[in-house]
Image 1: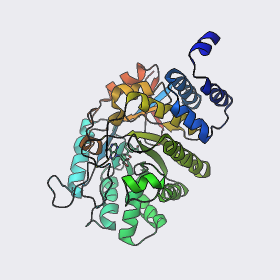
Image 2 (image 1 turned 60 degrees about the vertical axis):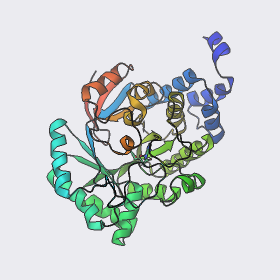
Image 3 (image 1 turned 90 degrees about the vertical axis):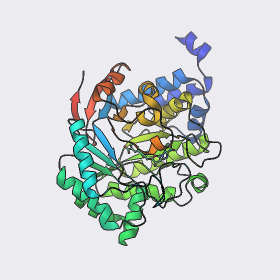
Image 4 (image 1 turned 120 degrees about the vertical axis):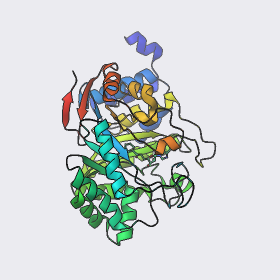
Length: 370
Ligand code: V47
């Protein structure tokens, strides 16, 4: 074994491995060293070591659907291929009745459905009551389905429409039936990059502040990082450490989801698809730096089922769900499809040597497939 290490291992990883095994927190420099290493076996081993320390051999999935009420958006994010202007070809907006009808159909298609993920555009004509009303109508009609809805960006927009504070807006959404907040809108938190890829979006500080406010009100949320566009490794490490600091304060984040950038129809100069090595590295480094996040998600829609499966041996312990309808990545050239039956999720997890666990949104165990 020592011979293998002597001959093969990237020596720069040895002090980091020692820290990981003794449970010592990694630094900014450690994060950079990890990203700069090509020693995938060691990155995978370390990521998987931490994942198994936290979650044993369990790997989670859920039965969920996404509904995107509108693609009409006043946003200007350059990585987004999904948004349309009102009146533009392909622009749509669903009525509450249409949303409920879709959800009814999706529930029939997905027995045991526990979660609906609702995010969409910043619609210029929708007001506070429209956004809150969607949550209320879904909850009234499907009381047993958890509503994970509205990114930090949307929450700020809704609050602005109602001339209310973030705190008041979240309280109203909770009263209407909101169960948790998805991680969308994180992109890259560093302002220099945000200015280039999403100049009109909330700042990185606001993103974190909105999540912290949600946590203080008892909501759980996820965090994301959009990687593989114009950001550097230093930007990624900075992003991860800011999230780690916020989590030290509130403990309200459940899952971190690195989102692989998809380039089609976007306005990012020189845009290209991410590669397998970078995707797996990012999963492993996320797991190693975010020592206070319970879960790391390998979102199969963006990673593809093969890399998502391998990611389960690099530090991820969650592969997301059945999904059914997904529009944001599809518009930007997704290759993985948008529906995965439960049986396939279970097979991917089992063949990664993990124990599949069907969970609800808050990681309560529904069934273990041992
Ligand atoms: O914030 C937009 C990203 C996010 C592109 O919390 C793109 O459980 C890749 O956050 N290529 C929304 N990504 C999706 C999201 C999410 C998805 C699944 C689960 C959860 C969760 C959250 O999609 C946006 C943005 O970062 N995105 N355009 C693109 N071209």
